[in-house]
Image (cartoon, rainbow, N blue to C red; front, side, top):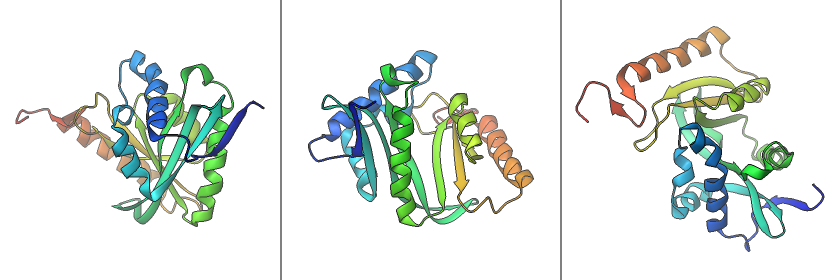
Length: 200
């Protein structure tokens, strides 16, 4: 690990390199049969999303081997009404999975997040990413929302949230709201917002 550098994205690292790392990191998901929507976004979309955020990279031999980002988003949802830290665009090259690369990236990102003063953190992942869901539950994240994702995706998405000062809602209520959105989404929609009862 001594030959790997962790830093906020420097100017000499291009956004194209970041996009390429994200795409390559999702090869594992593709083999499992679901394609993460953010992995195929255009570079311009990535830049637009992170104009109000920060991107962090792991560099080895002047090559991006991992990336993790966050931006501040204003939401009006049952679990938050205001600004929230939104984690996005994480990716580790397949050959570096299972190492400490991602841990060090997340640690660096969290230091920057702490400086914002915001206490609610959120991210989305695929319903099938059971390892990610399980690990983040250990770190205090809760499942709060279920959705069929945007058109072009082939999976359902879950939203996980952590309140740094503790969840203000009882567990039964959080579980109820999550299960309700899951029931409604799976009843009405197929992945990619394809309505189950025609009209698409």
